[in-house]
Image 1 (tube, helix red, strand yellow):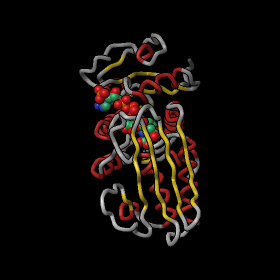
Image 2 (spheres, rainbow, N blue to C red):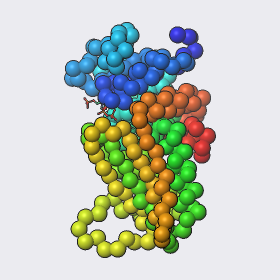
Image 3 (cartoon, rainbow, N blue to C red):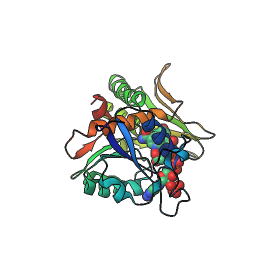
Image 4 (tube, rainbow, N blue to C red):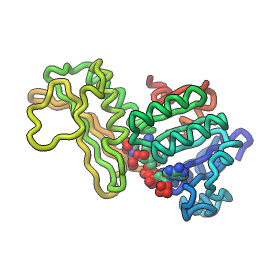
Length: 272
Ligand SMILES: NC(=O)C1=CN([C@@H]2O[C@H](COP(=O)(O)OP(=O)(O)OC[C@H]3O[C@@H](n4cnc5c(N)ncnc54)[C@H](OP(=O)(O)O)[C@@H]3O)[C@@H](O)[C@H]2O)C=CC1
Ligand SMILES: O=C(O)C1=N[C@H](C(=O)O)C[C@H](O)C1
């Protein structure tokens, strides 16, 4: 451990990503687990965060007092839910620390609230923190720009584990936004998120989404550009949640030197 290590808080410490973040921080140079936060009333409050994450004791008990945990920290890694992330954004702004937000499933109202919080805080938010998916987004944008809407239909397919509560995934929406940018259109005005029954023919220029859920799948995404007689498919497979955790830690380290504002992983990775 060094004096210059960035002091990080993990909120949602008992969750799938919370535990992965605790293990990742423990194994990385330049960062240190300052605190771990669970939901008030959770049976994990008071337990050692290392024990929870399968590391053995590390001397950091899970707390249900986020503001206390943030006050002497430098960054918070937040993979919880949009409603919780909006609350944590206010506390992170009070504590003047970097807020890395991985939660997905945002309503328009929640998006507006977190955007407003970034007037006073350094927020890095992305539906996917991995390098591979963010590169896939850049490739999807390029492909959508190169292959015209008249003749090339864009469909986004995703599969996740059976516990996932939101659809389409944050990543699918990120890829949809990238494709819409390449086409020079608004995603909201062109996306088709559900098909059932007699749908009629596919509207030209639509960006379609299809969602699969099952088992323990960590995250599968494909962007298909379907033309007459040929299909281009761009894909990403996540086989380990540590790709998201490493990206989140990189975002916190990058955010340390930034002004208040709303940033994405494209800014962190220099892909913007
Ligand atoms: N951007 C990215 O790269 C990635 C994003 N995600 C997203 O991250 C989120 C979490 O995913 P995952 O870890 O699988 O989900 P889990 O349900 O396993 O974990 C979420 C955890 O957050 C806790 N939590 C929620 N609200 C609070 C709060 N106010 N205070 C303290 N703890 C809280 C939950 O507690 P409780 O169970 O008591 O509610 C739970 O332990 C999802 O939105 C998912 O889509 C996931 C992977 C990568
Ligand atoms: O819930 C998950 O697990 C994941 N969520 C993110 C999403 O909604 O895209 C990222 C990753 O695919 C895993």
